[in-house]
Length: 124
Image (cartoon, rainbow, N blue to C red):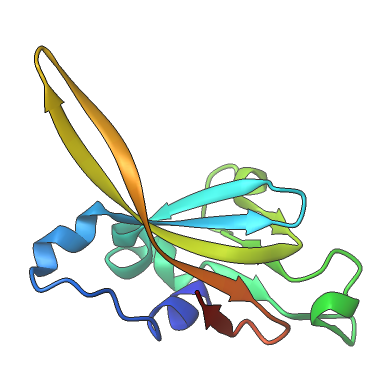
């Protein structure tokens, strides 16, 4: 499960309310990206179902036909967040800049998690 992998990482945040500003970008080998919010993974039923597939038809990891995969089977349209060849997961935080009369948002990359054959991470 994606939740199991991400729960091994530490987000240095003293205020738990601010965890809602974090999100995870899952990136495939072809640069396809899907996004999950912190609340989707850790505070929602979705997080209990997002799977990282590391073995299929007796093949493991990179030897699988499409590499390591990620799927969110409880999405209404499951194909949109299906990742083939999962390469890394980037943890980012939304940062708000106030500029009258509009607000602008950007992100800050906190950690990059390179995905390996058994859905373990190497933190950069």
